Image 1 (cartoon, rainbow, N blue to C red):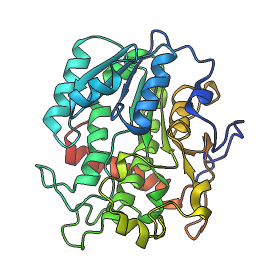
Image 2 (image 1 turned 180 degrees about the vertical axis):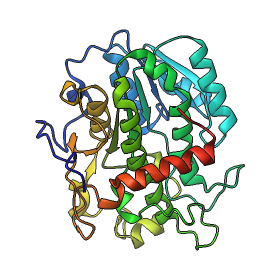
Image 3 (image 1 turned 90 degrees about the vertical axis):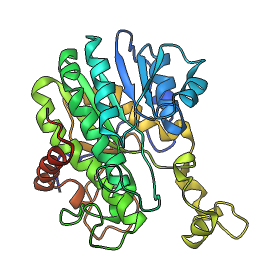
Image 4 (image 1 turned 135 degrees about the vertical axis):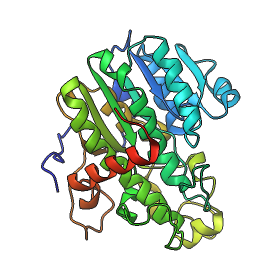
Length: 322
């Protein structure tokens, strides 16, 4: 466990919204990149950052959908990016770097969840590649622009699902073990926290701080690969296909789901902090491995040695370095 995982008692909570979390922030002259910033909680993140004055660039694999979602939001730009395609990541980063603009915020928001077994063109398992490795490469390639800003934050969307699995360094791509889409998803979300710890260590001397976020349980297109039958078998839906009465309090609106991301990206209370996992608009508590409630961050996700080991592996697999 790490002593950094100490709640601040921020004054916010699980029902706080992104608009409330960003209230009073002046982001004029700030530049943000929000992957997946055209749907779900990503769209809400884009909206509140832009309304606070930031210029928000939204990289998208399907630009037409992004333009349609963002056309009414001021100060937004759309660019092409596919997190499963390293050449696409490099092309996006090269274009941004050539603009000479500083970069103040990177929100690694895009992701896939519980998808059928798929590999990218390099043979890497898709959930690991999209949720972690693509964002690792993107952040590393954008490093000069982050340094240019003098003060920047990188927020990576993790999940409470990190409790499903530690990172398996022996077989990250399911080449020998049977594929389990939930173990794969959990491993990719554990990777997001470990990435945050190692990134903050490297970024803090340059004024770049990193945060990992559990947004909460929200109904969005992220769940599109999960059938109703699966949801019912897992207890997330009743026989009528509805959220069970005793679980409704666990779900958040999109505005509430984006709140912790926005808080980590903008709140002045975090000015000299980083390398932490956050939930419910606060720093989460470190909890033991046998912790049964759904709150907190488990030991394997905040293991400094594992974070450094994953960083080295990510450099090797992606070819990206700061």
